[in-house]
Length: 409
Image 1 (spheres, helix red, strand yellow):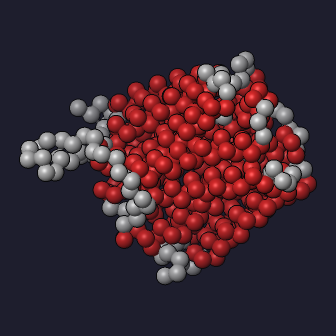
Image 2: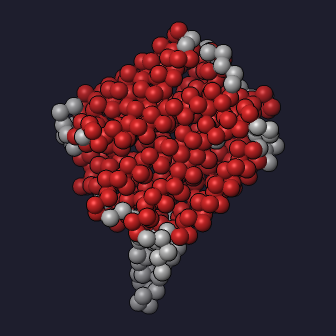
Image 3: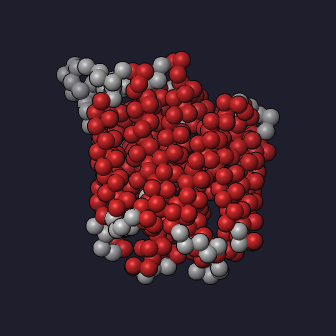
């Protein structure tokens, strides 16, 4: 019996999605405290952060389409459990090893959420609400990611036990998410096992097999530019989720953790606003326009480092987030609409693989360069490279229906 009505299902699924993603960015404003406590370098900060992305990519490649086979709810519950295990690692943190384990588990959780939760939100929407559901899914993703550092920054600055309390609060929220998940209707009909000779037997847990990047032929035209825009936009978000707190404290001399968390939050909040703006801009123009706005945001971030201005950094976070959100929603909406229902989660997961490569490799590069150069110079190099990629995507998709065809076609 479906306890939650179908028309309420997709907002509830979006809440679960947001709570899960919030846990992945909780440590962002706390990295400075961990550095003081454990005595590691800026490069180690980026490696700890990148371990999360490695976990995401591994799960997307291995189980990105798993909810297409076994159902959305079981995968969502596993994702909630992995997020809780990650929070426990940080709660009882006793050294660098547990930080790595916690970030890896967080990546596993985010990998499951990215494909299955997005697909769940889309599945549970009626045909008349598909556009709203697409916004709800992307907003839950970005909104959850933004709320993590804001929550942790406020608790770390103004409450006791700054390295413990944020994770206790998140465990409570995860318990709520688990209850909501149990109330959601299942949107996937489980397939009977083939070749077992028993008709109707349900194959609930098929073997995990590496799927690679699953891009059905009918999606390839929109996938190329969408994935490149996702790479560039997530590279900016990776910068704010990992290294921006160090920029704020070391280059801009801002030590208030609540302010640092709010700066990161502003980027993700602007991303959510950018997703809303697609309704005004129109899907055909959203991808190129978002790419160009992202270039402007990166230019402001570079200017903030050159001028040592916190105000310019916030402006860069807002402008960059707006551009990222606009392009991100256009990408997810077009890919989700083009993908066959039976391959929707797998296709969306393939997009997120590219996006999370963007959130990890450039950040590791920033950390490695910080061993040789000062953070300001490294930040200028980063913003220049990502801005060049975003500008190229914008130019390639201008006048082509927002990426209706892939590059080179």
